[in-house]
Image 1 (cartoon, rainbow, N blue to C red):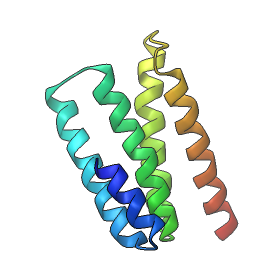
Image 2: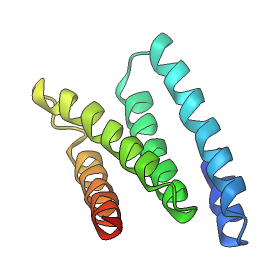
Image 3: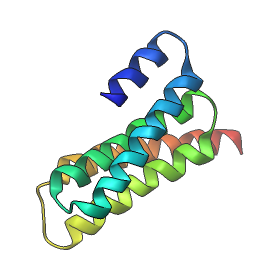
Image 4: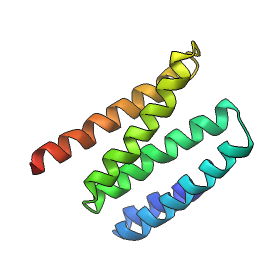
Length: 109
């Protein structure tokens, strides 16, 4: 629900607001992950981090976007390293996002 709100705000040109709403979603999923350890929560946290990174990028907060997408990659890689391939698609999406944000930072340097 929060990501849909952020997407709507961004689509209406309210990019700062979208980043704030997406950050709230990340905060909530992080709290959930502390209390509920299941794949759906982990997948939703990673997805919310990927979305948050995109919204941060829209407001030129590229270092933060890189950090958020990197966190998503780290979370999903640790699960994959444990032999669980169920979230490989999520990992592929997170890696794509992360590479996009790395390229954005490289353009600034």
